[in-house]
Image (cartoon, rainbow, N blue to C red; front, side, top):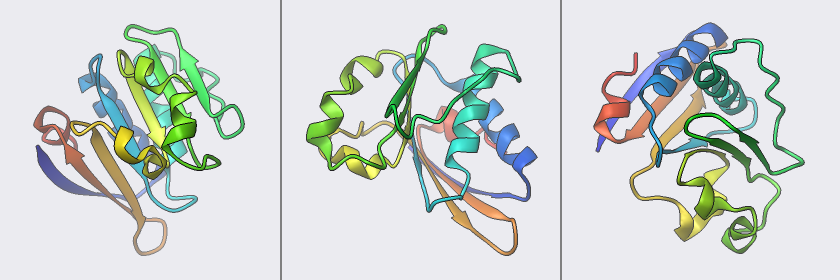
Length: 148
């Protein structure tokens, strides 16, 4: 496991980070996106999915109301937004365990509680000065080390 902090000066840099991570992710990976509202979790998730699909114009709706959006890619990707859930008991009903066979992107992963995979990549996004964001990556070396 490794930890790395990156400064993201623009949305384009957030997208570039997502593309790099998408190129390294494999089946069984979970990417947990934490941070306050507006910090860039959804931007990163959308860019990751578009990169894996090879389609920068792919419609990637927010799963805020559906709670999970699935993408039939290789491997499959499940994008979870757990903001409205009460806790781990409600997560189980969404097919989270099954989603872990592919790639799981999870916004608001603190709702997972004990269901959070121990070997997940956690990306914590925080506001810096102005539009700058700090992205702290904590997880498998193969995902963290290459990120710019």
